Image (cartoon, rainbow, N blue to C red; front, top):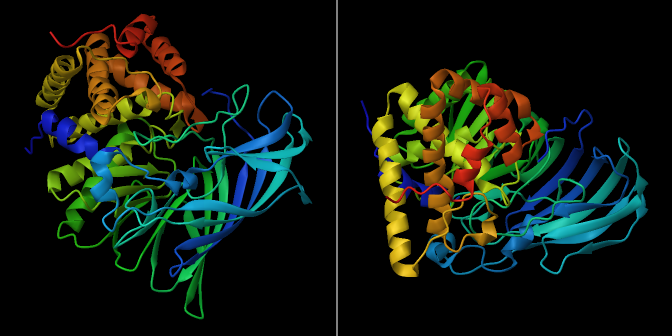
Length: 479
């Protein structure tokens, strides 16, 4: 039996990993994107048509979009990650618009001073009505090992396009953040066409429906139904191996990996394990992609990044498992990762421990014990240096003063929260809670209140006090 210490998992792995409402949407917004990548200028020139459906209860006179590419207009990582992120020195990127129209006519639009929000003015639409918004823009990539940027081996296109902000009695306007993932989006449909140099291999969200080669260029068409967002990666170094598990094709895109077959097997086992524990994986493909990335991994629908900076095999496998768990917690069951980061990350990290327990690849007791020791050490050090420590879990990313505070309060303490809840409820009720929660909010947006309500209903007991004591920091684990 291969054993992993949770102290290693928390202290070593998680710094690398750094990496709403439950109303069902019958009519989904559709994104039609056509992008042409120029490897010489490192730019992606796009036209994008968004058939935006008003699934709110209010009339709307504007639509707001989150502009993640503008987070690269300045240094995009904390000082602890500068060397890994910028191996060739600091580099910057952005998104610039050349045309925006609504229902075929020129319209007024503005970009916030911070660059994070695009507001497009439209003629008023009422609930269940839609508007067609056309955007023409150029994304300039930074030379950075990050979600969006070009590195030595890969070109990463995570969060490259304007994506509609979630509407909750007003559009939710998240800020950029270097800690965690500042994302929140609705399920939507995607039709994407990408054109790029024939030397590149493509790994993508969705499913490739056609591929054409002409004049040294590939034109690839992709379709994605009921995706939370869309991502792709290009590389002229990729090798690819595949396997099928439960009718799902699992592809591993990699370079310089003597353990490729083993890593693919781990991915397939994770997919099977989580499908059994939580609910069936709802897509036909899952792509595991080795990339230039300054953290350990990052999740997207049908696609996960695994950083080539992770060189230890056990750690690399751990990251694969963690990121695949995100296919359930955030990709299918959504939440506001900026304001309630614990909701997907705590549950994903605990799910990763469940994988090791259920497959016999790790010692669950030693991993949870390691998490407790790691958290106590964090509190002891912070109290010694700062005099006190904020142990609350449910706060927005900007309120975490340091990365270790974010990691320990969201990941480490999240493991302990769910381990304690499991001990209190017993296995039958606890695992039923997970199944029902996934079923309740698949392809919807959840929240802390929604999770608590779902778990309480399944457990047939009021769990609000239990969760709130952990989330607001009342529970003390330092003794």
